[in-house]
Image (cartoon, rainbow, N blue to C red; front, side, top):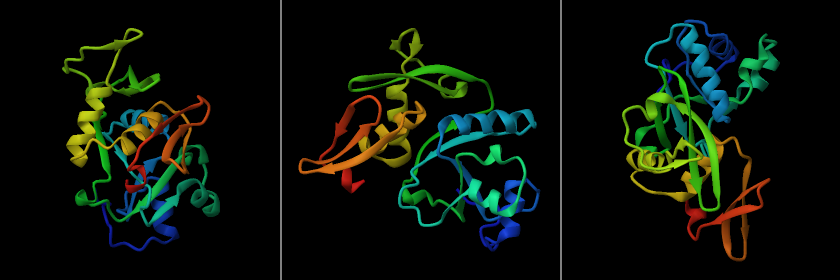
Length: 207
């Protein structure tokens, strides 16, 4: 994934142009730290008659140049700050061989209700309908299609691995559940903050 003009300097004017949706090509790509915020932006650009909308889930941890869009908007005195909530700007590009792209969902239609499953946790999620349209899904949870294996397969397609250290944070993020990482004598684990549930992986710290 490349910004439209990755060689442009990341100065105040470039930030202002990007955050105010001016047509000048710039060096940034927008992502969201909240799945629901990404879905809201998808619906907004569709209402503005955008075409070929996609939602891309990206592993941002360790990426060297990431800016907080809300902080930038505040410092530049821009209006409509709500639009920059949970938004981050990535400078330049995310190369395909970095294996940071976890999933890609076409987002040209409506949002649908679905479910995801982790060991000890069933959770509702909202996803672009095109992600499941025409796909045979054998299992349901509380009457909603269980897209867990579909999402696992998507992660494998994009990264070449079935890495639970990335899959579990992706599921929790899509479910809008806060989590954190912890390392103790037994090794690293992912903890769901309010559920009292954790998942431990011997090689989590290698992710």
